Image 1 (tube, rainbow, N blue to C red):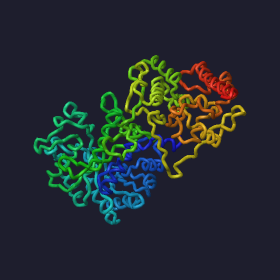
Image 2 (image 1 turned 45 degrees about the vertical axis):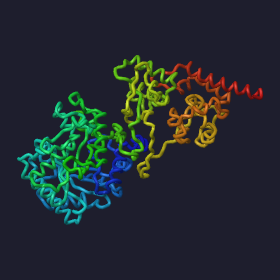
Image 3 (image 1 turned 30 degrees about the vertical axis):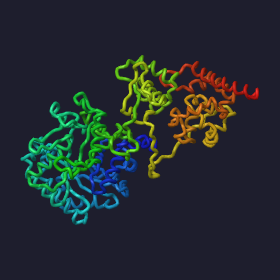
Image 4 (image 1 turned 180 degrees about the vertical axis):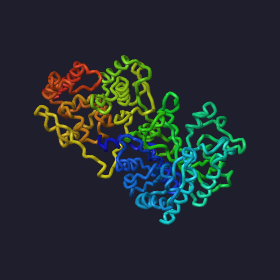
Length: 616
């Protein structure tokens, strides 16, 4: 697949995490709260480091956390101004915690070798060491101290902080937050950690997942509280000791960390959320791992950071967060949710479209007004097939993308093909609710049904990113298919550009049959030569020009050549061209329908010729 297509599909997710991150930077400056992403690599077909970094730049992602120190990724990040947290894997703690020389060598090899060209800003030592590998816990503080000493020796300690991500489970009795305290068996190590963080002005890294809090306390913690949804005062959580009101689980979790630190007499350490997120898919035991919930959680999380409201205990301090994670890690083990935390698939297309409502005008590509028409749940295959046949036939939906070999052909089933055809018709009809019915076979949704390389018509915004030259593959020229000799001038890009000046004001939904006179590869040639904003949706563009009267009322274009049109009609009867103009990949459009359309064109040409002969 071409890199250009792969990334253009991804559009700027509209989080898009992109715009949200830029806004945080613009409002708060480099030292303000930010939204970053974790990048896991248990991914099949992970983009190359160069493509990965190009994608991060396209999304305007300004902070990333790596779970290792991948040399190629760190090199690719050089010069990008993306701030990077690198990590010491748990299996390296023994060596680093046991030897200052090993720690110094690690910093020299994995940090100093890249800084400042690559903006490494933090070192995360291990991951949830105290709870997942307690046998290594005694080595955690020595490893942290040794790495910091190596940074001091390299004069990098002012720019690069050292900390360790912790599980929320180190905090006991987390609600109400005022009663929270650290697990007493871990208190000696946590006290040493907090002393170090306070001395070096480094953050307490916490992996906080309201999803798990909800799943472990269903019936006690409402879903809306976990998803940052607006609440009535009666549904807010109230700390009885402080009378602080909590509108979401995340704020309560952050404040439980602050209260836990306060119980150990530490009040000058900021909480940084090193991981948080919501899975988009799960197994039968994970019914709340859905695309809608993941979309809602991450979208509202970003807005929460943008609003910079802090927490009830510390409204003046907004914690920065890293969303877990950039890509679905499809190589991770069960349960199903483990492989479905990503914002994007590995081919860089979004798992869902994040949205941030009520955040002003900075999100130019806000998706909250996007609607799609898809096959309704529970409709039988025969009903869907009949509706599909109508949409791609008399309904004149553009079904070219569900032909064999095209981007939306797979999965090859009637439900997938019907959804694409329904949405094509619905968008063509201006998203009129009445156009998404198909006798009960269709329904309107705000969830983007696009998947992989298949982009549904409802996602009208097209973004063509600019990449480093090495990340863009050459664009293939469209294959030239031989046609009757009287049409060669319309086979090339320049020919189309000349033609376009005459016809662009007359396009409507009936133009397809007339443009087919130009040759079987008409669509590729048009897209090559003409800006998509001037093309109607069935040709890959966005323009609808029916208000101009349509091409049948134009005296320009080769379709008004009666002989050309009759020749095209005759071509439908030959074995060589019989299937060339099929617009329905599931059921061949009846030949009679094609001839009927061409008869309209022939009749129009004959009428115009007669009028010309009569001097009218």
